[in-house]
Image 1: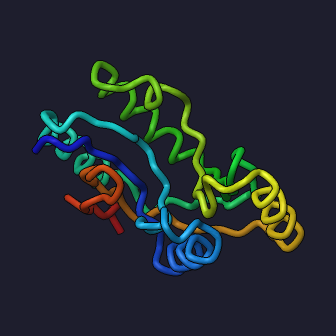
Image 2 (image 1 turned 135 degrees about the vertical axis):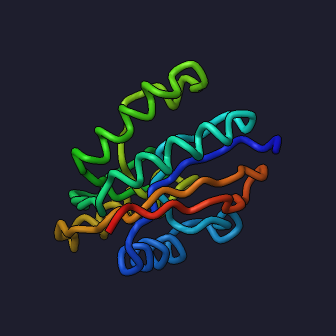
Length: 168
């Protein structure tokens, strides 16, 4: 395998459907070839796939479904995202950062800012307009993280390699 590996948190079906619908409404059609996602690591080395898989399998056996608070709508420059919070997710991320420290690119060494992007790479005035509209109607809600997904980055689209479910 030569493609970089991406690690995401898989959401419960209802939450995933909501964010996918938002993304299909607001993300530029020509750029929207992914489902909504919460990225934990952007670029893990493919030569370490076995160790990465072993570690996420081990962590998933110990991790119950995690509660995520969808706390606000945020501007992200030329787009809009939903900000999420979960102390358990931050702890898991810090553990994986520590475990994989020697392999991480600078972006993946930073503190995790959990979010789901529903619009990106649009003119700033369009992003501000959507942010204003979504914020006006926004009421915080909960979602659940149900497992971890490993993806191969294919220069744009991603290919699912593995889904490891959290213990029930």
